Image 1 (tube, rainbow, N blue to C red):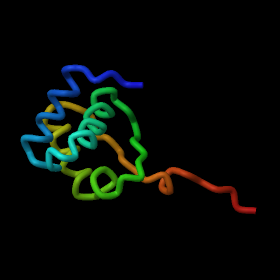
Image 2 (cartoon, rainbow, N blue to C red):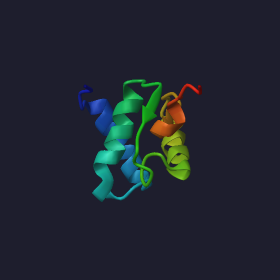
Image 3 (cartoon, rainbow, N blue to C red):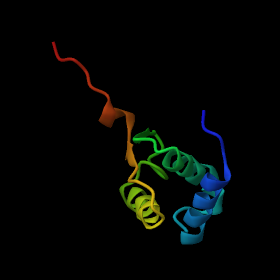
Length: 86
């Protein structure tokens, strides 16, 4: 479990100031901020509207880059699950 610290909250504010998502979706932006600050390699989500969304991913990562954070890969579960073929 990740702790909500000042660094994640500051990054969240950067996302909010850029208007990536409306304030109604603060928790979705916080989810991205926490993963970014924790240097998670891949974030997997079913949230296609706000998280696993090509344009939104680019916007989140643009801000992350500007602020010195590494790129965050965001995928749906289908993109990271493999099934053995018999």
